[in-house]
Length: 289
Length: 201
Image (cartoon, rainbow over all chains, first blue to last red):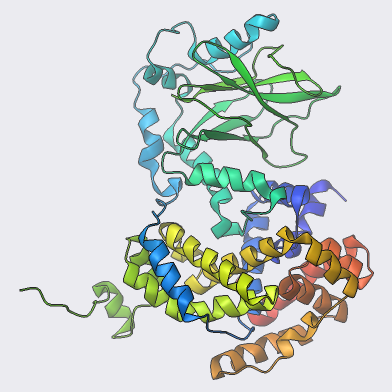
C-alpha cells in the first residue's frame, strides 16, 4: 500500500478526532493535497455531528451564561479569514518594478560566516539600502497565487473547518499556525524554493511568530536536514529549528524563537542536527517587511 | 425620543423564511458584527446540545462547564469565520465542542490510562439511551437505526471513538484488534453511517 493510500484510510479516525500527534499532522498535510480526501473528511465530520445530535441535551447552569456574557463583552473578535480579504495580500502586487529574480536562486558558495549575509542578500539583492517596502517587491507574485496560498493556509485555521485541535501538546504545530494565521496582523508571502517546491511563510509581528508551508519539498538524502533562520537587519542569523520534508503533501514547520520586526526568513540545508550558523546558501529567503 | 423596537430579521431573509425568527446561521452573522444579544440568543438555543455532548464525553460536571465555556468563547471569537456554505451553525459548533472535549480528555492522560484498563464502559450503547424530547427521540432513532447497519466491530470502534473520545490506538487496545483494523473499521463505519443518515458527501 502506498503512503497516500494508507493516509487516506485515516479519514474516519480523523473525523472522530481519534488521531493524535505526528500521524494527525501527516494526515492534515495530506488533506491539503487532495480535493477528494477533503470532501470525504467534510462529509464524515458532518456524520460525526449527526451522531452527536443523538446525545441527550442538558441545559448548562444559568451562571455559565452569565459568565460568558461578561467574558465576551471584553473579548475581541477575530477578523474573517485572509481568503476572504484579498486586499491584504493584493497590496504586494502593486509594485511597478517587480523583479523576476528568484529569491532563493543559489549564488557563489558562501563560507560559514557569510552564509547569513547570503540569505539576506538573496532576498534583498544588491540594493540592501532599499527601504523595507521595496524589499517586498523581490517576491512579488500574482495576487491569485498569494490568495491560493492563503486558502491553503486557511485550512489550518480550520479548527472550524477541518476540526483541527488547538490545545493538545502534540498538536502545538497546528495550533501555532492557526494562531499566526488568525492574528489580526497576519501576513504571508510565497517564494520558490531552489531545488524544488514553493514556500509560503506566514507571520504575525504582534505574536512574533512565523511558520512556513512548503509544497513539494524534496526529501534530503545523507542525513541532511532543513534548517530555518531568522535573519535580522544586521544579517545576523538565528537558528529557528530544523525539519524534514513531509512524506507526502505539504511540509509545515513553525519557526522556533521570536521574530523581530524586519527579520528575513530563510531556509538552508544543514548537516543532521542542524547548525548554529548557516553553512550553505539559502534555498529560499523571504523578508517580512 | 428613542424607543426600543424588536430586532428585525434581515429583509432578504424574510422573503425566504416568511416571519420565522432568526436562524442560528443568521444569529452567527449578527454575532460576527459584535452583537452580544444575538450571542445570548444563540447560546440559549444551542448550549443544551453542546453541554449534553461534552458531558457525555467528560462525565465530570465542572470540567464540562469549563469546556462548554471555551467552545462558546470560540464561537464568539470566530463568528466572522463561519461559512454558511460549509454547513449549518449547529454542525460548526458541535464539531468544535467534540474536538475540545477530546482535547480535554487527552490532556488528562492519566485518567485515560486508567479508563483503558477498566475497559469499555457504557459508551457502546449510548445511542440506545432514552431521549427526553420529541426532537432528540427522532434523532436517536435515526442514529440507532443507522448504527444497526454496522458490523459489531465497526459499531464498537465508532462509539468508543466518538462517545468515549478514545484515540484509535486506545480503541485497538480496548477491543484487542490491530490498529490497522481499527483504522479501516472507523472509516468503513463512518462511510456507512454517512450513507445511512443521508449526509451529503
